[in-house]
Amino acid sequence: MTEIERSGPNTCEPQPCDPKARGPAVIGGGPAGLAAAEVLAHAGHAVTLYDRMPSVGRKFLIAGRGGLNLTHSEALPAFLARYHPEGGTLAGAITSFPPDALRGWCDDLGQPTFVGSSGRVFPERFKASPLLRAWLQRLEGLGVRIRTRHRFTGWAASGGPVFETPEGRIETAHRPVLLALGGASWPRLGSDGTWVPLLEGEGVAVAPLKPANVGFTVPWTPVFAERFAGTPLKRIALAIDGTSVRGEAVISADGIEGGAIYALSRILRAATERGDAVMHLDLRPDLAAATLAKSLRDPKPGLSLANRLRKDAALPPVGIGLLREAAHPLPVTAEALAALIKAVPIRLLAPRGLDRAISTAGGVNGRELDARFMLARRPGTFVAGEMLDWEAPTGGYLLQGAFASGRAAAEGMLAWMAARTEA
Image 1 (tube, one colour):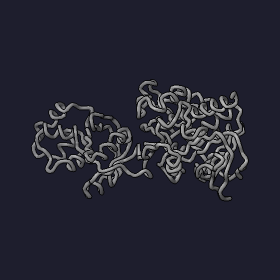
Image 2: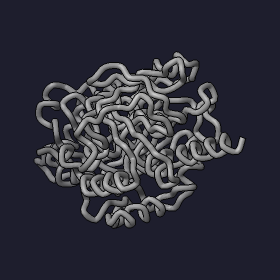
Image 3: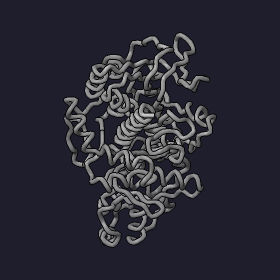
Image 4: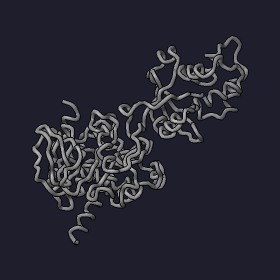
């Protein structure tokens, strides 16, 4: 049995959809949709949550496969600066539901968290499945109805959402509706971007969906690719267009990926779109160029250049290979070698496709929404999560954005319903 199949109740058994069902509906069973459903149900509403997959939370479970990074512990101003565009749609939502609030929510579910050495926040059990099971049990207790294998296909003439189901096409009478359909990364888990033409057909401006937190292709020589594919690059720094990050990366057969690459992916993607994407890799960011040059000066007689780089510059074989990829032949002076070690040029061709990206950039333009996350062109329709036009690096920022925007959109729905009742 897979972790997805063990995720908990209400996720794998298809339930019939009631065409006469009214009240608020949430479409999309990822973190944003589940968070929205919880807020609405806590407020006393009978909520129906729809998802096109056989179970909910599939991408959430995959995100936790190597340890679920829920959020980050850094101060809120620095935290908010990780999102692009800064001060955009998500800023108010995250301020209202910041990382400490997400940690408190986990505690309330009986899933306490801890701060790792990097400042990242994880559940103590380090997995997504126990958290998702506890969450689904809470939603069940609140009366949330989960309907799987329901693909949203648009709106009926009456205004309610329409679904394709195993039993055929079904029109419903739900109002209001919150869309949390995800981006277009990991399409096999349910986020395939098929909602884009549906919203564009309603006149909603949608920025093109692009891969974010993704690896990039590099024209390695066959010899280098065959020898070093899968080799990690540890304690490095990467720089492009005046922005640099420290971290780690991994050489692949056709490129480079990993945390440091993901942290720069927005800038790297823009550079590849311009056609001038040359990233510089510092193999020894802990040493100044002058210090490195001093250690490379006056080599021992008979020492080969490769051994000189290995012993005097402490470079691993993959680092020496990168130098050879960048310069033919390698410079021989200590100063020139040090300069190359501190800034190895790597030409990036393009980001990998959306199907290999961790997340998605682009989405519903923030100008299409009011302060309640409601579409101006479709009153009563709200949007949350990765459907919105924002991006952030890995490290807890993606899930925090999903949770916060789902809750904010649900609060917007509650305000909209209250205003209609008063009217």
